[in-house]
Length: 416
Image (cartoon, rainbow, N blue to C red; front, side):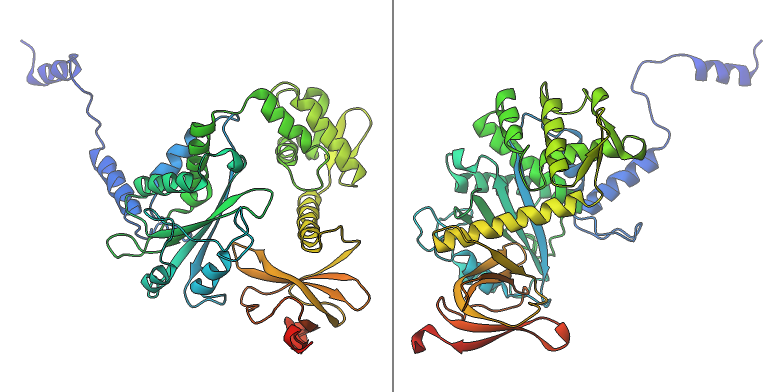
């Protein structure tokens, strides 16, 4: 006669139909609680880096299923602006985003929202007066000019964000057409629909939102063809800026010993057939710029300062294009001064003013001095240029202790 212990063992080992039960249910339940906490925007105490926020789970899903290389490219820049920090007030920033010359017809721009093409900006600013922070986004689809309606695209993106974050958003936006790449400035209030601080997970800001923007652009325009991809990459071979080809080369350098890229065995890199030739062409261009070297047998090394140098070159090219558009002709030479000021005082006539960085609100002045030389002066984000007019003559000097720039009016256009 079998003993009771033997019968229990037989019963335990006998196969039975049904769902397998995990033995660690408490851990699964805890995981669900943590996800709910993150979606509610609560702060994680398990890590010093800590602000989890809404959209963490969705950002992870999007990072696992991003569009293939044929998807439409979209650049998304983001900044969280906290109240009380140095910088232009929200009302001033929005007023400048609505300046003349940014629309298709050159007229002053109007901000739009979820339900109107003429949003009440003053009411929006008043609603945000007591908010701890707000969000600035710049959304720049590579093929923005081909989209049927950039405003409708922005509204679709905002609705998608609301679904991902689990809350309605209070936002205004404006579309700019004054650059080679039309783009949208999206300002989102830092408060959810329940009146709590809106905390968005950093991964959603850096990855998830861009993935959503790419999905919407690809849905309307369709995936890029192989010919279209290679045509755009071919234009970047000679570019004097940091390009996707450079990013691919940088990734290649991190996967090989000593950072030496052997292009003879690099056929697996790139987005399709023929890309290897474009990468070699780009390396040859970098060599002429002093940013890459080769042993003559297909092995290449990229200079350590290639990325910052190319980004600085690209920024200088953007500045020169701005000056050329302002003058209506090619500027022979432009001296660029950062926010620490020029080495020597400059006195000149204001040719243009605007935002050097539309995300941070950093302003600039373009001047012509008495010798006909052109100067591009970057100002600090908190610097107010509203009182300066085109044609005014000003003197730019370094502030006390070299801490910044001081602008002294010499005489104004009205006094001339």
